[in-house]
Amino acid sequence: MRLLNSCAVMYSCLQRSDSPLFRRGIPLPVFHALTSRRRSEGRMKLNKLVTSSRRKNRKRHFTAPSHIRRRLMSAPLSKELRQKYNVRSMPIRKDDEVQVVRGHYKGQQIGKVIQVYRKKFVIYIERIQREKANSTSVYVGIDPSKTVIVKLKMDKDRKKIIDRRSKGRAAALGKDKGKYTEETTSAMETS
Image (cartoon, rainbow, N blue to C red; front, top):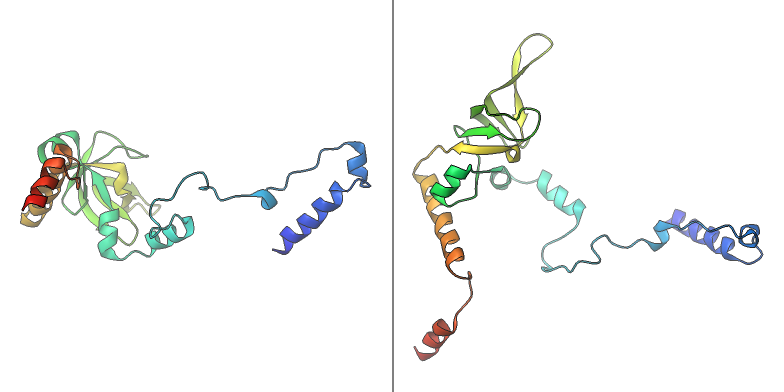
């Protein structure tokens, strides 16, 4: 704050007509600190209950509990699985088969997920290793968003999740989700 005040005083001194810079016709510097505005000022905020603050969003991301990190560590499904299950992405889990599509380790190689390390927001994949200086090999952590799920490990709980999500997607595609038509409103009024 003290810096801003001193900049304002200096700027006002330079604007005076008896200033040597003003008399010479030298253009004055523009102090962005004095004229700065919020970056999102042009955009309208839709929900007042959800913050747009970068600081708060980063804090929530890095202090998120494990059940929220599960959702954050989702990966898109391959085109074949997307057609089959009518779901775009799923939280990644151990024993899924994935393919790395972006980054240093991208390629056609498909590997099984060995561990989902939620604390570090990374997954470890079967074939992706590097050699340390003492010649021991360690798994390299990969961000789940850089992968594509090629094969899902299915059990009854995951099947239930996929059925629920695909049903919601089908309903949203069929009609506007949550919108009433004239027929449904007239039927509700008569009953």
